[in-house]
Structure formats: C-alpha cells, structure tokens
Amino acid sequence: MPPTFGWDNFEDIAIALADKYPDTDPLTVRFTDMHKWVTELSGFSGDPGASNEAKLEAIQMAWHEEFQDRQN
Image (cartoon, rainbow, N blue to C red; front, top):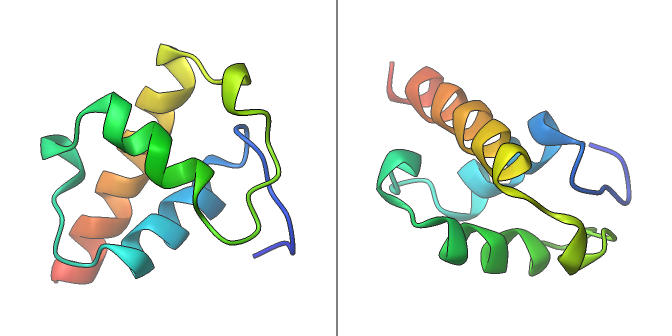
C-alpha cells in the first residue's frame, strides 16, 4: 500500500477497510459511514469533499471483493 492515498485508490482503501473492520460486511455500511471511515484511515490524504457516489460505490465493491476473499 502506498504511504498516502486518495479517493481513486479503490483497492488500497478496500484493503485498509478490510484490515480495520474485518467482521463488517461492506454491503451493510451506509455511504455516510464509509465516507467517514475512509477519511479516518491512516495514510488517507484525499480531500473529504472530493468523494462522490460513484467513488464510494467503487470502494464498496472493491471492499466487498476483499471481504469475500478473506471469508474463504
């Protein structure tokens, strides 16, 4: 993972969220909560106002894929 990352680093964010919230199914997380969690990640350097629904959906899907991989 790079030392810092922003909204477009979907995979890096997904891995960091899966590490921090290993028992959380990403499909149950509201976008408002996910936005907050992403901005609180160590190394996140993106502008909190630069996110949008499409970016949050991409993060959620990448996180869901990571979550499923870890369940197997």
